[in-house]
Length: 363
Image 1 (cartoon, helix red, strand yellow):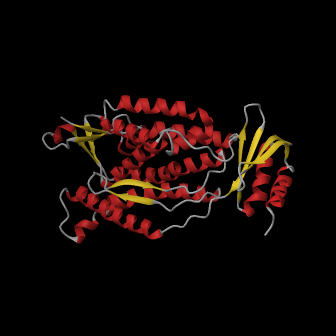
Image 2 (image 1 turned 45 degrees about the horizontal axis):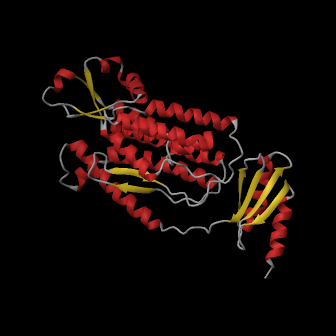
Image 3 (image 1 turned 180 degrees about the vertical axis):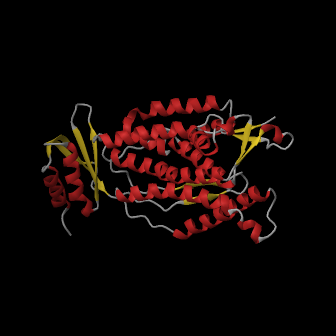
């Protein structure tokens, strides 16, 4: 067995390749190792080299700034590779498939399906919706693994008691985020991937939707109206024309409604709060200043709850789950221009998919 003294010296020698050490030590006998000082060159290059050295040794490198303008390098043992039970993911996906097919068949038939053939008509809603949700989560998964972050496969949440048959899907990140760059990449990958699918789904759905005069709906209109975000309105104008806005209503196909749900899910995820996708992006851009913006967003949601109670429920849920965000390992390397542009794109996507009153009950 190698003496811990020599391990300490090996680690110290590696750090001195990129770092002028002012002081160093260990928190306890098992680490972590803490070094305070200044990088000899570009901090980003130094951090990258340290990761190359220590990653094969199953050690991870965290970097912070100190109050006196120095840097603190913290080297600790990487967490073990988590085990996954993929059958849980498979079971939840199957149950969500059943619940969304059931809801979709009800949309097509306007009554409960009586046989397998009627049940399978739900594909017009279930398939595009699960495709949007699944591609969204796989976007997160792919970028997480690309940055060396362990992640579960998507967990789908079946819920046959609401109008879409599911409460969405999520992945669970199982190891620390290495940097703010990685945090932004992982955060924005899902909304971009999901929206790339939701847009053609909406176009196809609108092409088969029907525009009818409002007068023809008297006594037969649905008691529920869905608010349309800017992106949906734009696609509606392009596909159905200006006539669809003149004393008219659009009877959405189940596929078009799946696209609408995709836009709504995108806007929910892009809200800059806590550990939502938008919260990841917010922290990547603003660092520790993110908390002030998150509190403002939650306050806005509470105010919007006057018009739609769903926002109030969402705000309470975010407060319960926590609106703060954990630090990535590398807290000091700034975002590059490309990622700042992606952050701006995320804001544009939020504006285009957000609707103040998503659902309104017609009196």
